Length: 86
Image: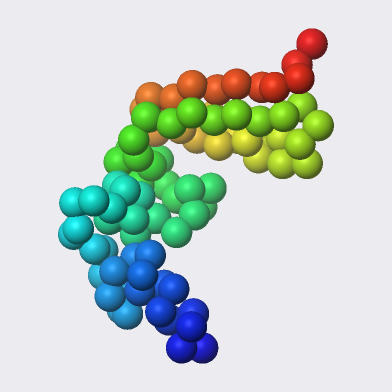
């Protein structure tokens, strides 16, 4: 369990999960977004412009497309590429 706490603290900030204010961290880390797929559109708005690439044969293709829709709803600038599409 100490290793999990260390990893959590290294990613999110302190052991209590308080957002880290280090300017070198990504906006997702500063706002304590643990999973973009579980985040609200309001939380996603802080993300930097995103490039999303999925493969047609990817098992998670539907999740990638869903994430693209979530970024659009949140107003995040993104580029979406589907590799292998005919």
